[in-house]
Length: 234
Image 1 (spheres, rainbow, N blue to C red):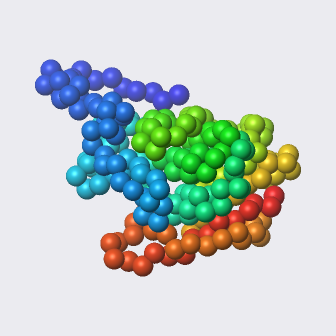
Image 2: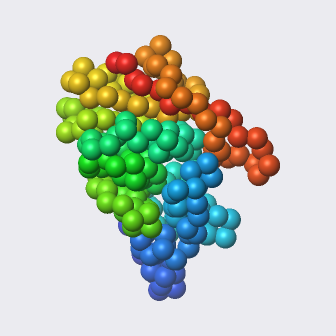
Image 3: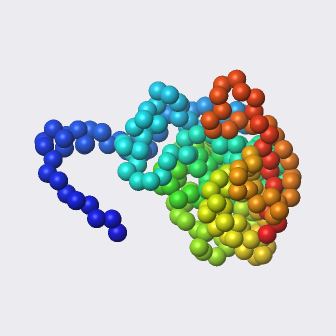
């Protein structure tokens, strides 16, 4: 529990605070641009841009918590997974797909477009869930968005789990790997998209395909790096 010390605010401060708040859904709809995803033009997403104010004001106005707005940017792991799924629709056709660490929902949206029987997008950021629903509507697909940490739970009701770009931190990578190993042991197929982050567990992966896709932080004009899709072996 966090202890909050209360202070008396001047009237002008109270008014400023009230006027600064923006509902997350309204912020996305009004401030972000709907743009096709580079390398995956079949999908368009609400996307941050310099004039959106998300980087400068987003946490102050629509967050108030510790979740950076990762969902508003394109990450190579999700992009390469979406590209691979759309190019190999038989992988998900008719199956129950869970997009773990879904962010914008791009992987789940790709699965839905490829004919998945049902799609769940799971992320710990409540704003990612809102963005995922809005992005699904833009792409005319149906997905279920869930804001929850499921890594301490049992295996989900899914046939295949898609994991985009969750190996950027050692602690998170260790926890994700343990969860995925249990899912594989329970008969669930796991696919991973990653551009080669530091904590990617290479010894537990089998390469399925490679694509040159953009990544967050790319400077315009930079050549896209190769990212890969793997099957997680357990």
